[in-house]
Amino acid sequence: MTPYLHINGIRKVYGDVVATDHVELTVAKGEFMTFLGPSGSGKSTTLYVLAGFQDPTAGDIRLNGQSILATPSHKRNIGMVFQRYTLFPHLSVGENVAFPLRVRRMGQDEIAQKVKRALKLVRLEGYEDRMPAKMSGGQQQRVALARALVYDPPVLLMDEPLSALDKKLREEIQVEIRRIHQETGVTILYVTHDQEEALRLSDRIAVFNRGKIEQVGTGPELYANPATHFVADFIGDSAFLAGELSDVKNGQAAIRFPGGHQVVDVPIHGSAGAGQAVELMLRPERIEMSATPGAVGASLPVTVQDVAFLGNATTVSARTEWGAPLTVRLGFGHPLSGRANRGDKLHVHWTPDTAHAFIRA
Image (tube, rainbow, N blue to C red; front, side):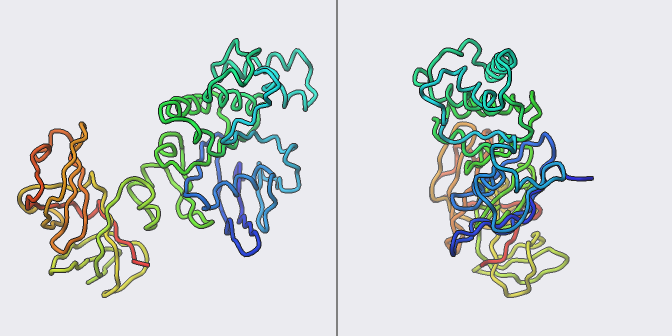
C-alpha cells in the first residue's frame, strides 16, 4: 500500500553544515505527527523542505505516491502556521482568513461561507471585522490557524506555533489544536522543542537529534522503551548511573558499580561486551525507596541529600555510596513521603525491566 506522505532520505546541506542527514519518515493520512528535538536538530529544516520553502540537497517527498519537489510552494496546497502569527496588520480578521481563497480566485459567496466555517472551527465567530492589533496573542494564533485551514489543505504544517504564548494560554490552545485535528481529520506535522507539548498533542513523535531521526513512536513507547541515550534523556525525567558491563547474555546486561555493587538482567541497547563502560537509565517514578533492601529486583544503598514536597509527589535527591546522584519521585501517600530527611540511610530498588543500559560514548 502506498504511504500517504513519505519523506524519503531528505538531506539538506548549507556549506559545511549538514542540517538534515537522510531523514526517512512515513506519515499516515489524518495522523498528528510531531517533530521533537532541540534547536538545530533539523526538525524545522525538514518541515520547510516539505513546505517548499527550501530545496533539499538530496532525497524526495511524496504525497499520495507523487513527488512534490518540483511543485512550487504556493501550489502544493499545504497549510502552514508559524511561530509568529504573520497576519496582515492592515486587513481585518475576515480579510486575513479570506486571503488564500482570493489568491485561488474563488467566488465571493464561497469565500464568505468558508471564512465563516473556519472562524467557527477556531471559535472566533463574530470576529470578522476585528483588526489583528485589537486581539490577544492567542486569538491571533487562532486566526492564523483558521487562515491555514480555510482552503481545506490535505496537510497542515505547524512550526513552533505556541512558543510565543505564556504557559496557561499555550495549554488552552493545545486543547483547541487537538480538538480541531479530531474534527477535521487533517494530517498535521508539528514542530516543537517542548516534550510535554509533543506528548499532549501527538499520535506519534519523531525525535530529532543532529539532523537525524533517532526514534519514532507514540509517547508511551518512547518513554517506556527509548532506543538511544539521547531519547531516554530528552523524553521525560531520567537518572543515569555510570558503570561497567560484567556480563551480557541474550540482550540482558549485568552491570558492576564502584564498591562491588552489581545489578543484573537489565535490557541493553547496542552491541557490547564485558568491561565496556555503560550508563544505567532509571525513571525517578519507577524507583522504589525503603528503609531496607528490596526483596525483588536490583537494590542499592543511598544517602538522602534533599527532600522536596510537591503536593502530589515528593522528590528525594540522594547519592549512592560511591557519590553518584540519583533522584527518586515518591507518590503521595508513600510511607516515606514527608518522612524522609536529609542524611537518612535508605535503599532504592527497581525491577530490571524498568531500567535500560546504554553504551557510553
